[in-house]
Image (cartoon, rainbow, N blue to C red; front, side, top):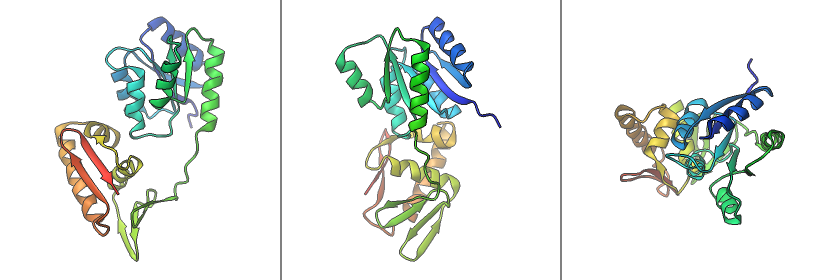
Length: 226
């Protein structure tokens, strides 16, 4: 089994990106270089890495924006920002956008590696059988099961994955494109129609508790409210 750890490196300076990649790959990491923020987000959805290293100032989408998008569906993955900005407010903005660490340029490779290892050790390992309470329901992701009173409702894998993301971002809108790319792998028209059908099925399975709703926020996405 391949035990190498996947890291996404979003850095628009080619020389620096290559130095970081080569240094990390000698230490049992697989590094995927992205030249801008949009590519980094696409790569994250495709590769499912264990950690991200994001430059703050990038074309198309800056590092803070990438982190905010990722945190809509993933609260746990470690994110390190690289930046030449040194103002206190910049650091505050970085942590507020979902970053776990903030490394100012120039930096030593050893310092980056130490911080990566530190963050990877801190990532919790979720218990697969832990039940999530949502309203009057108990939801088990691993067993793909909803339980309310004496009623047990089976879910498909995709229904369970979709519900899990909605619950993780309860009372917040999740963009359609993020849901589609995370679960379906592509946000094309046909996958969009498929997701709408799955949302309808989930609504029916959650209708035993009238306080739970999945609402469509027009032009944006879906939100589960309790």
